[in-house]
Length: 427
Image (cartoon, rainbow, N blue to C red; front, side, top):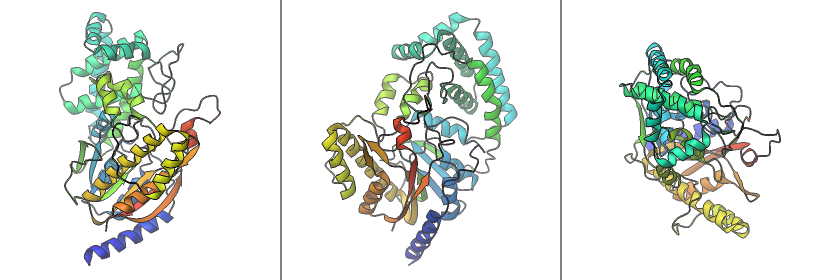
């Protein structure tokens, strides 16, 4: 009876929340540590906050099984909940670790200034820098030579050599994340890429990259201030490397799930993330293999013969008539999301909710109604669907691809004007 009553309360609250304004176009997202590093297609922090505030109590556990830049776990912490974030992406995990670690502003700034002084001195010792670059895998060096000007390579290598001297692992993580943030920016930052944070990179032959040390200095104070504002009052945040299709969590250990999975046929995160990861001891071969394991990856491999519900199956059949390979990619996406939803159902406590924030996509001019398809999959697996509601994306604030020639007709722009919240309850 208690579970039944809890489920009814959760359903009533969810229905009420879905009727409210979930766009948050006028709300600021630059508080606490939310703006520490660029990350494609982040949802506004107010979105997970409204579900956390209304569907959990202080001390309860909130999970984001595809945590990305950590928005959900930061909000869980700020509201006195225990936040757990799981992801397979190395940069996402690095961002989350730093965003949930409070550092005293003066200590962080002193460490950054110390690194800048060392880097400036190292720039005059190019032999040491060359030895550092020679330590990188050959494939990484080839990549770096193509995407970074010779002068920029010296600046970035001098910064990394300076950061290596830091003994405190939290300080080192913080400085490495600032290093990454000067590379991965919407304007391409210090690389020769045109738009790096949000779309397929394009090399610009005559681009004049910004000075890496200057960019590091500009971001240092703002980043240090953001972490001090985090005001950690408890140790209730866990960031775990893991796969949402096989969560490293016990059964029925979570009180709420709020997550935003990759869209079908949308953003390839690794295309941008590798620009900083190749500098941070990650080989391109490893990153390429890892990329193939992401939900939504175009490497198909072996697909199970698990049947999908009618809406997903019909969409795949329609797409197959136009593009059989794209149809296989879409089937893989739905099967991956099915496996993720199975795990969400397993770890969630009875009577509790999951909010999945995802939008439709377009493949070969066919609309893929992903929210409805995922809702059908979840219902078939045992979830109850409390509702699906649309939220409009504010292109002036949502982290989307840069617009070129002002035509506004890039494929991602066409796909990503809206998204939906799929609200589920575990019986």
